[in-house]
Amino acid sequence: MDQSYRIVGILVKEPKKAGTELQNILTAYGCVIRSRLGINNDKFKGGIIILDITGDEKEIELLINKLNNLKGIEVHYMNFN
Image: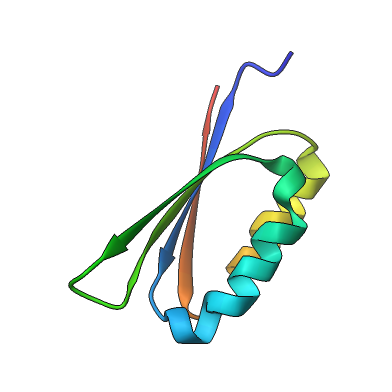
């Protein structure tokens, strides 16, 4: 049984640029997303998305790679063992 927590933090800097493709990626990799929290920030037209991810290591790696290649967002990955 997996005893780790994997968190992906996504700062959405340019929602008009990244929004649709970001949603498509998150939908495509929904099988590894255990929970998702979105927080808007009124001071700029973006926000953050926090993902609790679990499951297949290859799928998680593909998800993170796709997110890192998307313009208009910043991605951080944390693994707590």
